[in-house]
Length: 400
Image (cartoon, rainbow, N blue to C red; front, side):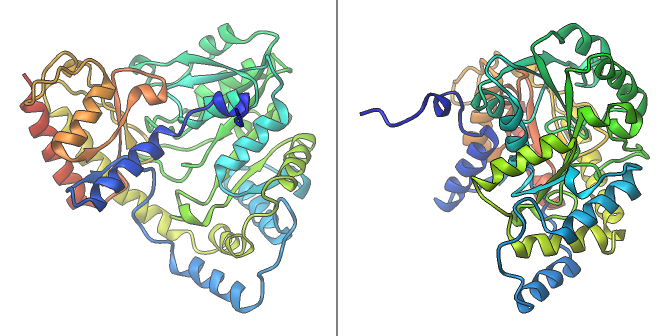
Protein backbone atom coordinates (compact mmCIF):
# COMPACT_ATOMS: atom_id res chain seq x y z
CA UNK A 1 0.00 0.00 0.00
CA UNK A 2 1.38 3.40 -1.03
CA UNK A 3 1.23 5.89 1.83
CA UNK A 4 3.46 8.69 0.55
CA UNK A 5 2.09 11.72 -1.23
CA UNK A 6 3.07 13.11 -4.60
CA UNK A 7 4.20 16.27 -2.81
CA UNK A 8 6.84 14.46 -0.74
CA UNK A 9 8.15 12.66 -3.81
CA UNK A 10 8.99 16.01 -5.41
CA UNK A 11 11.64 16.86 -2.85
CA UNK A 12 14.94 15.34 -1.74
CA UNK A 13 16.84 15.46 1.56
CA UNK A 14 19.04 18.50 2.15
CA UNK A 15 22.51 17.89 0.68
CA UNK A 16 24.19 19.96 3.38
CA UNK A 17 22.39 18.02 6.12
CA UNK A 18 23.36 14.75 4.41
CA UNK A 19 27.06 15.67 4.37
CA UNK A 20 26.94 16.80 7.99
CA UNK A 21 25.19 13.61 9.09
CA UNK A 22 27.65 11.42 7.18
CA UNK A 23 30.58 13.22 8.78
CA UNK A 24 29.03 12.72 12.23
CA UNK A 25 28.50 9.02 11.56
CA UNK A 26 32.13 8.58 10.51
CA UNK A 27 33.34 10.49 13.56
CA UNK A 28 31.17 8.31 15.81
CA UNK A 29 32.78 5.26 14.18
CA UNK A 30 36.21 6.56 15.15
CA UNK A 31 37.25 8.03 11.80
CA UNK A 32 39.27 11.28 11.93
CA UNK A 33 36.97 13.69 10.08
CA UNK A 34 37.13 17.47 9.74
CA UNK A 35 33.63 18.72 8.94
CA UNK A 36 33.48 21.83 6.77
CA UNK A 37 29.97 21.15 5.52
CA UNK A 38 27.75 22.76 8.15
CA UNK A 39 26.74 26.41 8.02
CA UNK A 40 27.00 26.89 11.76
CA UNK A 41 29.19 29.34 13.69
CA UNK A 42 31.61 27.70 16.10
CA UNK A 43 31.13 30.58 18.55
CA UNK A 44 28.83 30.13 21.53
CA UNK A 45 25.66 32.17 22.00
CA UNK A 46 26.63 35.37 23.88
CA UNK A 47 26.16 35.26 27.65
CA UNK A 48 23.64 38.11 27.81
CA UNK A 49 21.36 36.21 25.44
CA UNK A 50 21.66 32.97 27.44
CA UNK A 51 20.96 34.93 30.63
CA UNK A 52 17.76 36.34 29.10
CA UNK A 53 16.60 32.80 28.35
CA UNK A 54 17.29 31.66 31.92
CA UNK A 55 15.39 34.66 33.27
CA UNK A 56 12.45 33.83 31.00
CA UNK A 57 12.37 30.29 32.41
CA UNK A 58 12.60 31.51 36.00
CA UNK A 59 9.83 34.05 35.35
CA UNK A 60 7.50 31.34 34.09
CA UNK A 61 7.60 32.51 30.48
CA UNK A 62 6.92 28.94 29.39
CA UNK A 63 3.42 29.07 27.91
CA UNK A 64 2.01 29.33 24.41
CA UNK A 65 2.59 32.69 22.77
CA UNK A 66 0.93 34.43 19.85
CA UNK A 67 1.31 32.11 16.84
CA UNK A 68 3.67 34.32 14.84
CA UNK A 69 5.65 36.02 17.58
CA UNK A 70 5.37 37.75 20.91
CA UNK A 71 4.61 41.49 20.95
CA UNK A 72 7.99 42.16 22.56
CA UNK A 73 9.90 40.26 19.88
CA UNK A 74 7.94 41.89 17.07
CA UNK A 75 8.74 45.27 18.65
CA UNK A 76 12.45 44.39 18.73
CA UNK A 77 12.34 43.28 15.09
CA UNK A 78 10.56 46.46 14.01
CA UNK A 79 13.20 48.53 15.83
CA UNK A 80 15.97 46.50 14.17
CA UNK A 81 14.61 47.24 10.71
CA UNK A 82 14.26 50.93 11.53
CA UNK A 83 17.73 51.30 13.05
CA UNK A 84 19.71 49.11 10.66
CA UNK A 85 17.77 49.21 7.39
CA UNK A 86 15.85 52.51 7.48
CA UNK A 87 12.57 50.65 7.00
CA UNK A 88 9.31 51.15 8.91
CA UNK A 89 7.02 48.23 9.63
CA UNK A 90 3.99 47.61 11.86
CA UNK A 91 3.41 44.45 13.96
CA UNK A 92 1.00 43.02 11.39
CA UNK A 93 3.84 43.11 8.84
CA UNK A 94 6.10 40.90 10.96
CA UNK A 95 6.13 37.11 11.20
CA UNK A 96 8.27 35.01 13.55
CA UNK A 97 8.86 31.32 12.87
CA UNK A 98 10.90 28.35 13.99
CA UNK A 99 13.99 29.36 12.04
CA UNK A 100 14.43 31.10 8.72
CA UNK A 101 13.67 27.88 6.87
CA UNK A 102 10.13 27.76 8.27
CA UNK A 103 9.63 31.41 7.33
CA UNK A 104 10.58 30.65 3.71
CA UNK A 105 8.46 27.50 3.72
CA UNK A 106 5.44 29.40 5.05
CA UNK A 107 5.84 32.23 2.55
CA UNK A 108 6.13 30.00 -0.51
CA UNK A 109 3.36 27.58 0.51
CA UNK A 110 1.07 30.50 1.28
CA UNK A 111 1.65 32.17 -2.09
CA UNK A 112 2.68 29.67 -4.79
CA UNK A 113 0.08 27.85 -6.88
CA UNK A 114 0.76 25.00 -9.33
CA UNK A 115 2.35 26.50 -12.44
CA UNK A 116 3.71 29.58 -10.70
CA UNK A 117 7.38 30.20 -11.41
CA UNK A 118 10.08 31.23 -8.96
CA UNK A 119 13.35 32.63 -10.32
CA UNK A 120 16.32 31.37 -8.32
CA UNK A 121 19.86 32.50 -9.17
CA UNK A 122 22.29 29.57 -9.17
CA UNK A 123 24.29 28.72 -7.16
CA UNK A 124 21.58 28.80 -4.50
CA UNK A 125 20.88 27.58 -0.99
CA UNK A 126 19.85 23.96 -1.39
CA UNK A 127 16.36 24.26 0.12
CA UNK A 128 14.92 26.96 -2.14
CA UNK A 129 14.05 24.73 -5.15
CA UNK A 130 12.72 21.90 -3.00
CA UNK A 131 10.36 24.18 -1.08
CA UNK A 132 9.12 25.62 -4.38
CA UNK A 133 8.58 22.08 -5.68
CA UNK A 134 6.69 21.07 -2.55
CA UNK A 135 4.40 24.06 -3.05
CA UNK A 136 3.71 22.88 -6.61
CA UNK A 137 5.62 25.69 -8.27
CA UNK A 138 8.36 25.61 -10.88
CA UNK A 139 11.89 26.78 -10.13
CA UNK A 140 13.56 28.77 -12.89
CA UNK A 141 17.26 28.40 -12.21
CA UNK A 142 19.37 31.19 -13.69
CA UNK A 143 23.06 30.27 -13.86
CA UNK A 144 25.33 32.97 -12.47
CA UNK A 145 28.99 32.22 -13.07
CA UNK A 146 32.27 33.61 -11.75
CA UNK A 147 32.28 36.48 -14.26
CA UNK A 148 29.38 38.06 -12.35
CA UNK A 149 30.71 36.90 -8.97
CA UNK A 150 27.85 34.37 -8.90
CA UNK A 151 25.19 37.13 -8.89
CA UNK A 152 22.17 37.58 -11.15
CA UNK A 153 22.13 40.74 -13.24
CA UNK A 154 19.12 42.95 -13.88
CA UNK A 155 19.29 41.91 -17.53
CA UNK A 156 19.23 38.20 -16.69
CA UNK A 157 16.31 38.77 -14.35
CA UNK A 158 14.33 40.71 -16.94
CA UNK A 159 14.91 38.01 -19.55
CA UNK A 160 13.48 35.31 -17.29
CA UNK A 161 10.33 37.08 -16.10
CA UNK A 162 7.01 36.13 -17.70
CA UNK A 163 3.35 36.24 -16.72
CA UNK A 164 3.79 33.10 -14.56
CA UNK A 165 6.58 34.55 -12.45
CA UNK A 166 5.50 34.89 -8.81
CA UNK A 167 8.80 35.31 -6.96
CA UNK A 168 12.47 36.11 -7.35
CA UNK A 169 14.71 34.87 -4.52
CA UNK A 170 17.83 36.82 -3.61
CA UNK A 171 20.37 35.82 -0.97
CA UNK A 172 22.99 38.35 0.05
CA UNK A 173 25.47 37.60 1.54
CA UNK A 174 25.12 34.32 -0.27
CA UNK A 175 25.09 30.74 0.81
CA UNK A 176 27.06 29.05 -0.80
CA UNK A 177 29.33 31.67 -2.40
CA UNK A 178 29.63 34.51 0.12
CA UNK A 179 28.95 36.99 -2.69
CA UNK A 180 27.13 40.22 -1.80
CA UNK A 181 24.96 42.49 -3.96
CA UNK A 182 26.08 46.11 -4.00
CA UNK A 183 23.64 48.97 -3.59
CA UNK A 184 23.95 49.78 -7.31
CA UNK A 185 23.24 46.18 -8.32
CA UNK A 186 20.22 46.02 -6.04
CA UNK A 187 18.88 49.29 -7.44
CA UNK A 188 18.99 47.92 -10.99
CA UNK A 189 17.29 44.69 -9.92
CA UNK A 190 14.67 46.62 -7.96
CA UNK A 191 13.74 48.61 -11.07
CA UNK A 192 12.98 45.36 -12.90
CA UNK A 193 10.77 44.28 -9.96
CA UNK A 194 9.05 47.67 -9.89
CA UNK A 195 8.30 47.43 -13.62
CA UNK A 196 6.69 44.01 -13.07
CA UNK A 197 4.08 44.53 -10.33
CA UNK A 198 2.99 40.87 -10.44
CA UNK A 199 6.50 39.79 -9.35
CA UNK A 200 7.62 39.66 -5.72
CA UNK A 201 11.14 39.46 -4.34
CA UNK A 202 12.13 37.38 -1.35
CA UNK A 203 15.46 38.53 0.03
CA UNK A 204 17.21 36.17 2.42
CA UNK A 205 19.37 38.43 4.60
CA UNK A 206 20.35 35.89 7.26
CA UNK A 207 24.08 36.70 6.88
CA UNK A 208 23.53 40.47 6.99
CA UNK A 209 26.07 41.15 9.75
CA UNK A 210 28.80 38.96 8.30
CA UNK A 211 30.41 41.26 5.72
CA UNK A 212 34.07 42.16 5.24
CA UNK A 213 36.49 44.63 3.65
CA UNK A 214 34.26 47.63 4.46
CA UNK A 215 31.41 46.24 2.35
CA UNK A 216 28.18 48.12 3.17
CA UNK A 217 25.17 45.82 3.39
CA UNK A 218 21.87 47.01 1.93
CA UNK A 219 18.58 45.17 1.61
CA UNK A 220 16.63 45.68 -1.60
CA UNK A 221 13.58 47.46 -0.12
CA UNK A 222 15.93 49.91 1.59
CA UNK A 223 17.44 50.77 -1.80
CA UNK A 224 14.04 51.23 -3.45
CA UNK A 225 11.12 51.67 -1.07
CA UNK A 226 8.70 51.72 -4.01
CA UNK A 227 8.83 47.91 -3.96
CA UNK A 228 8.21 47.42 -0.23
CA UNK A 229 4.83 45.79 -0.88
CA UNK A 230 6.50 43.42 -3.35
CA UNK A 231 9.29 42.49 -0.94
CA UNK A 232 9.54 39.90 1.81
CA UNK A 233 12.68 40.28 3.91
CA UNK A 234 13.75 37.05 5.61
CA UNK A 235 16.19 37.16 8.49
CA UNK A 236 16.91 35.53 11.84
CA UNK A 237 19.26 35.22 14.77
CA UNK A 238 20.93 31.91 13.84
CA UNK A 239 24.11 33.05 12.13
CA UNK A 240 25.20 36.43 13.47
CA UNK A 241 24.20 35.65 17.05
CA UNK A 242 25.33 31.99 16.99
CA UNK A 243 21.83 30.79 17.83
CA UNK A 244 21.33 28.02 15.27
CA UNK A 245 19.76 25.64 17.79
CA UNK A 246 17.41 28.25 19.23
CA UNK A 247 15.40 28.23 15.97
CA UNK A 248 14.16 31.78 15.52
CA UNK A 249 13.65 33.32 12.09
CA UNK A 250 11.55 36.29 11.12
CA UNK A 251 10.20 38.16 8.13
CA UNK A 252 8.83 41.56 7.22
CA UNK A 253 6.45 42.07 4.34
CA UNK A 254 3.03 42.89 2.97
CA UNK A 255 0.20 42.44 5.49
CA UNK A 256 -1.88 39.97 3.50
CA UNK A 257 1.05 37.61 2.99
CA UNK A 258 2.14 37.89 6.63
CA UNK A 259 -1.41 37.04 7.75
CA UNK A 260 -1.51 34.03 5.44
CA UNK A 261 1.85 32.83 6.75
CA UNK A 262 0.48 33.08 10.28
CA UNK A 263 -2.60 31.06 9.30
CA UNK A 264 -0.42 28.31 7.87
CA UNK A 265 1.77 28.31 10.97
CA UNK A 266 -1.29 28.09 13.20
CA UNK A 267 -2.10 24.75 11.59
CA UNK A 268 1.46 23.39 11.67
CA UNK A 269 3.88 24.26 14.49
CA UNK A 270 2.00 27.11 16.18
CA UNK A 271 4.34 29.49 18.02
CA UNK A 272 8.13 29.21 18.17
CA UNK A 273 9.62 28.40 21.58
CA UNK A 274 8.69 31.05 24.13
CA UNK A 275 12.16 30.83 25.69
CA UNK A 276 13.89 31.25 22.34
CA UNK A 277 11.75 34.28 21.58
CA UNK A 278 12.76 35.91 24.87
CA UNK A 279 16.40 35.23 24.03
CA UNK A 280 15.92 36.71 20.55
CA UNK A 281 14.58 39.95 22.06
CA UNK A 282 17.87 40.31 23.93
CA UNK A 283 19.86 39.35 20.83
CA UNK A 284 18.28 42.11 18.74
CA UNK A 285 18.02 44.73 21.50
CA UNK A 286 21.10 44.06 23.60
CA UNK A 287 24.81 44.70 23.16
CA UNK A 288 25.84 44.40 19.49
CA UNK A 289 29.55 45.16 19.89
CA UNK A 290 30.60 41.51 19.61
CA UNK A 291 29.32 41.36 16.02
CA UNK A 292 32.24 43.41 14.73
CA UNK A 293 34.77 41.32 16.64
CA UNK A 294 33.38 38.04 15.35
CA UNK A 295 33.27 39.38 11.80
CA UNK A 296 36.97 40.17 12.10
CA UNK A 297 37.67 36.56 13.12
CA UNK A 298 35.67 35.26 10.16
CA UNK A 299 37.51 37.63 7.81
CA UNK A 300 40.86 36.32 9.02
CA UNK A 301 39.69 32.76 8.41
CA UNK A 302 38.38 33.67 4.98
CA UNK A 303 41.71 35.22 4.00
CA UNK A 304 43.59 32.12 5.14
CA UNK A 305 41.31 29.63 3.36
CA UNK A 306 41.18 31.57 0.08
CA UNK A 307 44.97 31.88 0.03
CA UNK A 308 45.49 28.20 0.86
CA UNK A 309 43.05 27.01 -1.80
CA UNK A 310 44.49 29.23 -4.53
CA UNK A 311 47.90 27.73 -3.83
CA UNK A 312 46.64 24.28 -4.86
CA UNK A 313 47.09 23.29 -8.51
CA UNK A 314 43.70 22.65 -10.10
CA UNK A 315 41.70 24.81 -7.67
CA UNK A 316 40.81 28.48 -7.96
CA UNK A 317 38.77 30.44 -5.43
CA UNK A 318 37.18 33.88 -5.52
CA UNK A 319 37.43 36.10 -2.45
CA UNK A 320 33.87 36.57 -1.10
CA UNK A 321 32.59 39.70 0.63
CA UNK A 322 30.44 38.01 3.27
CA UNK A 323 28.92 34.99 5.06
CA UNK A 324 31.35 32.24 6.11
CA UNK A 325 31.64 30.20 2.94
CA UNK A 326 33.98 29.95 -0.02
CA UNK A 327 32.98 28.31 -3.30
CA UNK A 328 36.15 27.05 -5.00
CA UNK A 329 36.31 25.90 -8.62
CA UNK A 330 37.56 22.30 -8.93
CA UNK A 331 37.08 21.76 -12.67
CA UNK A 332 40.87 21.60 -13.04
CA UNK A 333 40.80 18.31 -11.12
CA UNK A 334 37.96 16.62 -12.97
CA UNK A 335 39.27 13.70 -15.04
CA UNK A 336 42.15 12.96 -12.68
CA UNK A 337 42.52 9.75 -10.69
CA UNK A 338 42.82 9.24 -6.96
CA UNK A 339 45.61 7.16 -5.43
CA UNK A 340 43.05 4.34 -5.31
CA UNK A 341 42.60 4.53 -9.07
CA UNK A 342 39.16 6.14 -9.07
CA UNK A 343 38.58 8.68 -11.84
CA UNK A 344 36.92 11.93 -10.74
CA UNK A 345 34.13 12.58 -13.24
CA UNK A 346 32.18 15.22 -11.28
CA UNK A 347 32.34 17.53 -8.29
CA UNK A 348 30.36 14.91 -6.35
CA UNK A 349 33.12 12.36 -7.06
CA UNK A 350 35.64 14.94 -5.84
CA UNK A 351 33.93 15.60 -2.49
CA UNK A 352 33.22 11.90 -1.93
CA UNK A 353 36.88 11.01 -2.49
CA UNK A 354 38.00 13.95 -0.35
CA UNK A 355 35.88 12.64 2.52
CA UNK A 356 36.88 9.00 2.13
CA UNK A 357 40.59 9.50 1.39
CA UNK A 358 41.43 12.71 3.27
CA UNK A 359 38.76 12.90 5.98
CA UNK A 360 37.48 16.36 4.99
CA UNK A 361 33.74 16.90 4.57
CA UNK A 362 32.63 19.58 2.10
CA UNK A 363 29.56 19.91 -0.17
CA UNK A 364 29.56 19.55 -3.95
CA UNK A 365 28.64 22.59 -6.04
CA UNK A 366 26.04 20.64 -8.03
CA UNK A 367 23.95 20.44 -4.85
CA UNK A 368 23.71 24.23 -5.10
CA UNK A 369 22.87 24.20 -8.80
CA UNK A 370 26.34 24.79 -10.27
CA UNK A 371 28.55 21.86 -11.29
CA UNK A 372 32.33 21.99 -10.94
CA UNK A 373 32.61 23.63 -7.53
CA UNK A 374 32.47 22.76 -3.84
CA UNK A 375 31.49 24.69 -0.73
CA UNK A 376 33.62 25.07 2.34
CA UNK A 377 32.29 26.54 5.57
CA UNK A 378 35.08 28.28 7.44
CA UNK A 379 32.96 28.68 10.57
CA UNK A 380 35.33 26.53 12.59
CA UNK A 381 38.60 26.94 14.46
CA UNK A 382 41.84 28.17 12.91
CA UNK A 383 43.51 24.89 13.85
CA UNK A 384 40.91 22.75 12.09
CA UNK A 385 40.94 24.99 9.02
CA UNK A 386 44.73 24.76 8.80
CA UNK A 387 44.63 20.99 9.11
CA UNK A 388 41.78 20.72 6.58
CA UNK A 389 43.60 22.83 4.00
CA UNK A 390 46.74 20.71 4.44
CA UNK A 391 44.67 17.58 3.84
CA UNK A 392 42.97 19.06 0.78
CA UNK A 393 46.32 20.12 -0.66
CA UNK A 394 47.85 16.69 -0.07
CA UNK A 395 44.81 14.96 -1.60
CA UNK A 396 44.89 17.15 -4.71
CA UNK A 397 48.64 16.83 -5.16
CA UNK A 398 48.35 13.03 -5.12
CA UNK A 399 45.83 13.03 -7.98
CA UNK A 400 47.27 11.86 -11.31
